[in-house]
Figure 1 (cartoon, rainbow, N blue to C red):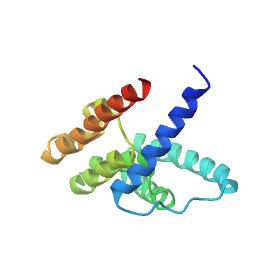
Figure 2: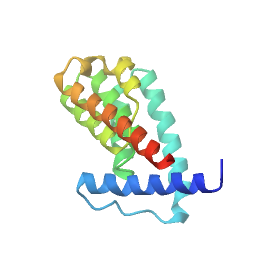
Figure 3: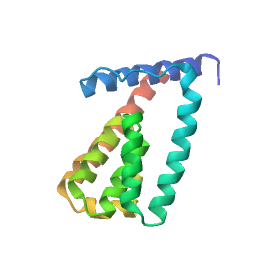
Figure 4: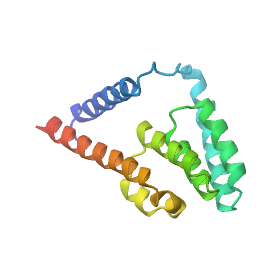
Amino acid sequence: MTMQEPALKLTIFIGFSLAMTAVRGGDPQPQPSVFDLRGLQAGRAVANVRSLQLLAAGRNAEAEKLLAEEIEHIPFDFSARYNLACAQARQGKTDDALASLKRAVEDGFRDPKHLQEDADLELLRKDDRFAGILKTALGFMSWVQSFLTLAAI
């Protein structure tokens, strides 16, 4: 890897992040101070582990509440939104789960295979709206591959 490749990847990532903000049609969320980042990362890591423990224990309502609180602090955390969709789907909250899943994909969740195979999403795959969410994830991956191919030229 040359020294220019990491810089190019960073430039692509920053450009994509700005484009996604524009696509969402809103102003970017206020950024925390660099001095806040360690605490935010540590708190997010603890909450992530706790929410996964709650899901594993079948305590879906508690996991949903914890994940919703985390999303209030970090609105574009696609991982928390994805897990929120799982917690909601496990409780039969199809509309809420699909809305959370759609937002997770819009915010950056890009694993179409996982969407197709995750047992937590079984209920959602039966809904016609799921196909649109999956198509968005697949389409984005195709766009990224094309963009990276052009960037490599």
